[in-house]
Image (tube, rainbow, N blue to C red; front, side, top):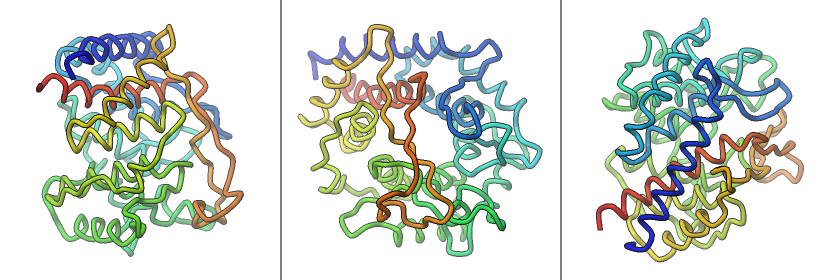
Length: 308
């Protein structure tokens, strides 16, 4: 990828500059506009996790913004030990896992009780739910593929029966075509990327399923998730094409346009991928989430280019 290196370096630098410029004075990032309001804890954890995956030279330059975000997350942990979408809703497994992953990548061990809180979301079937089940959560309190995957990545390390049960559930939840459905997203690409990452971390790497390879996302979020999938398999013409498409789609301010891909699934809907009206879709209005996702994907491509 000799002709791609400079383009990747420029695109990732501009994206990082945009994210730093949109970081709040207190160290957090805020995006989305769902019924509970904008997201702070979840968005900060996600952006921090994406920044932790940037290439070494850029990562060094991002050390101060990342440290500020990590300190903010530590100060805003919920009373139960986890993190959530924002303080208006209970903690959830996704936000908690992302915060743990980000803090660990930033050299900060998970606070006491955070891993214990994350493991409370594991259900009897081995999977992880987004929220703890009660009389109101409905399907939000049942095991979800993408949530199980990110929880396993955060709670991993030493294998134990609970981790093995989670991996076994994830294998059972897999579709016949090798992909994983997503409870909260309109596309299966992100859930599949996370599922493959879990299997690789467990010592069982697998190739990207043909069903994913046949996808041709038209929005930057889907293209970035697909690029992340492909990057795990090494260099390929398809990966370079996706990277060039993403670079060409970058806005003058360094961001990428979001797509209506985040789904607020109805609480009475267990399989939104089979439901014609599972719930409304939302895009990130500040483009922070999408830009962080593309930055992480292009950083993985950049890592491959730097090794050639």
